[in-house]
Length: 151
Image (tube, rainbow, N blue to C red; front, side, top):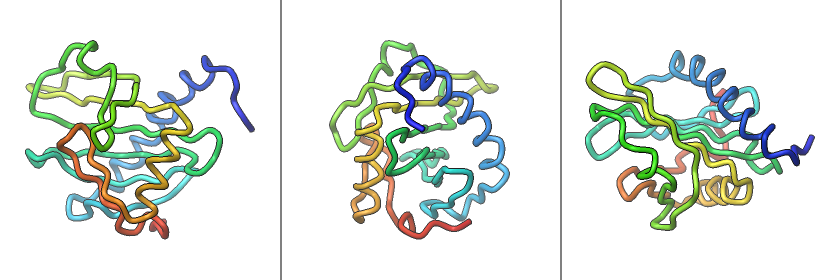
């Protein structure tokens, strides 16, 4: 099924993110950074920032015409302004993203959603080809087992 209505896509990704986040955090193990898993049409993995803050990366529908990427960063910092996050760097190239930030105690959970199918598939292809992708000039994403993710 191909979604041509951008409103549907913009509503679908947050719903998928919420559905996925609950189950993925339950499966998340801190010693499994850069180990990719699959389930329900998603590929997901965890990495960390330069400050050892956890980062959850979800690729929805990899290789399809409805692919997208959701990146969530748990941070000890407070939420930043929306204008600062209108784009996110993928290997030093800015890509437009949707941004949300939820305060959590003294810190926050920041979520970036890349809904551009071509860019999302490029991210997946780069990882699958064995390249390391650097997000926001500080988060390194390795491919490890993305070609054969765990269930």
